[in-house]
Image (cartoon, rainbow, N blue to C red):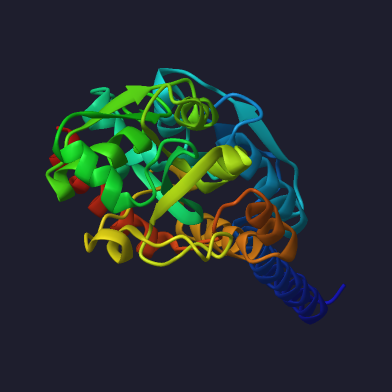
Length: 322
């Protein structure tokens, strides 16, 4: 073969090789971009800090059903009760921040460091979004002779009034203490094994009153009288019940809120995907109806808003219970 033809062949081969390298590089970039945007590709574990069947468990599972439709992978609920929720939260915080382990965080995420000296601080997690709120309500037995919250406060002003709650260190114990501080009345918190049993104690006269979620109070029917809701507005399922501020002029707001969180340090794209999915799930008709049926409010806060709110609640409980 003449030298010129050999040179031309070599040049053609070199050009083809260069083109192949460019195409290979482009393919690798595209594959890298696809990998980054593919989350999630595996199942996601949702750690629940409570036993099956309770409010935290049911809210978590209702949200998980919607998240599966949105994210296209299985969301696997895992109950991990213990240490008032600290066991689950410490576990989630110790996992790799890859988005494949998330958890349901109740209000206790802002309380446990104060009430239990637990190694649980809001700043140690990525908070993805608030998903619900159960405003506190104050109830008395229907035959107690107490007609209004003003009557209850007046009675507590002349001596201790027992108030049942869902357990030592719970949000409803904190709410009872907060009501007492706001009114200079003497309320004695009495812990029970859950909100339902607490309201039953008030219904039977075992305690003078109870603080719980609205759903637990409504379940007692005519056996109790709901005196006020501890929220900044009336509950849509109990529109005839005044807020504490309407009843006695004191702005006392406490509720059992909850949301979804993850280990600290999620990649930005993973965090934004999860945050958007939580928002879409919370706003779905099915999830909204579930919370309504449970007597709760659908209250959504995005990651930034919920982080600020939880930090404020942490400070509130530190001052109130510390």
